[in-house]
Length: 121
Image (cartoon, rainbow, N blue to C red; front, side):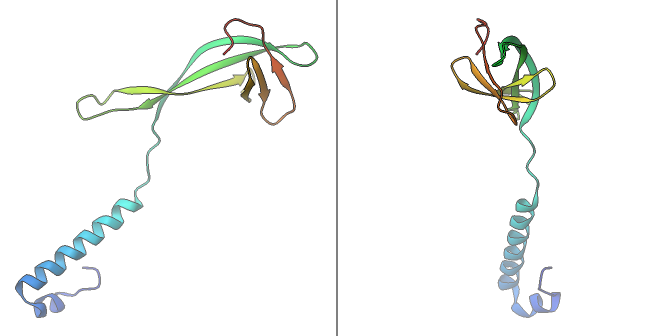
């Protein structure tokens, strides 16, 4: 028992001892809950489309759009999932941010891309 010995509990008497033990158990359970590591809610990622964009020099770059699915399982339906964010990546796996209507920027570089592809988000 945390900080209490059996001699201390016995000296408190019947109901006070039970209350003291209950309080210690409540506090111990609360600290155990805060020490648990939260699990990632991401369940899976799926490729949902590709499109072509051009950089400033006119070179074509293929961009891949991925959809994440998040875990939304319940007791009755543990396999349930919900849509999460979408991500755009280059062929070599670099992340791409959307900066405007059919305009994109590759993270970590100054390359701006633009697309006239109808499947571009």
